[in-house]
Length: 253
Image 1: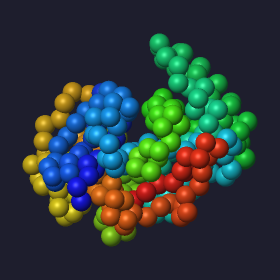
Image 2 (image 1 turned 180 degrees about the horizontal axis):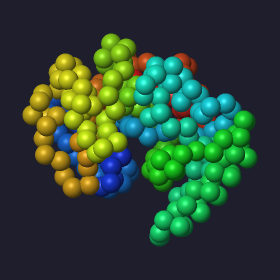
Image 3 (image 1 turned 120 degrees about the vertical axis):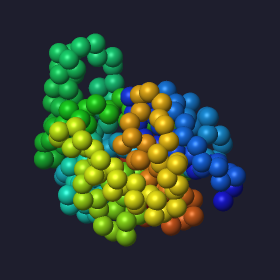
Image 4 (image 1 turned 135 degrees about the vertical axis):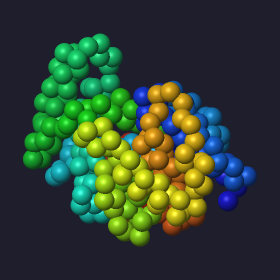
C-alpha cells in the first residue's frame, strides 16, 4: 500500500490526523482547516473522518440513513451517534456566534428549521449543534470538488472500535461525568495496540487544542482508512445513500 492514509477527528485546534504515509511511517498532524488537511496530505490520500458527510433535504425517521444503520452496531454507545438535521438547518448554523446567548438563539432557530424538515418533527442536541460548522466546512469542500468523495469518507469512532474489537463495542465511555477518562481511554488503547499500532505512537505528546480522546479516535479511523483502501471496510447502510448533490450518506468501518 503506497498511498497516504489518515484518520481524522475534529478538535479545538481544528482537525487532528493520525497519518501513515506511503512508506509506512506514522505521524500526527494538526490542521486549522479541512481544506488545508486535504492539501497537506497530498493527492490520492484516503481520509476517514469523524464527521457527517452527505446532507438530506429532509430527514425521515430517526436521522440520516447512516445514523439509522450505524445504531444497529451499538447499544451502550448509541448516544455518541448524533442525529444530524436536514441540509438547510446545517447551513443556517454556520455564522460566527459571539456569546452564549447568541449561540442559544441560533440553536433555537436551527431546531425550528430542523423540525419543519423532518418526519416526525425532530430537533437536535446542543452537542450536535456544536459540530455543524465543521460539517458545513467539509460539505462545502466536497461539493466544490466532488471527486474527493471517493477518498474522503465518513466514519465514526465508536462503530470503528466495535468493528475492530470483533463486534464488541466499548464498555466504558471515553469521558466520565466526574472528569476522569482513564478506563475508557485504556480500553480503546488496548484495541488499537491489538491492531498493531505501537504504544509510543498512541502515547505521544499532543499539541495544544487537541485531546487524548480526539487522538485515539483519529487512530481508530486511520485503521478504517486502511480497511477502506484494501476494500475491507463495510458501509452502513450498504449501499450508501446519496444527497441531492450526489454525496454519499454512509458510515464506513
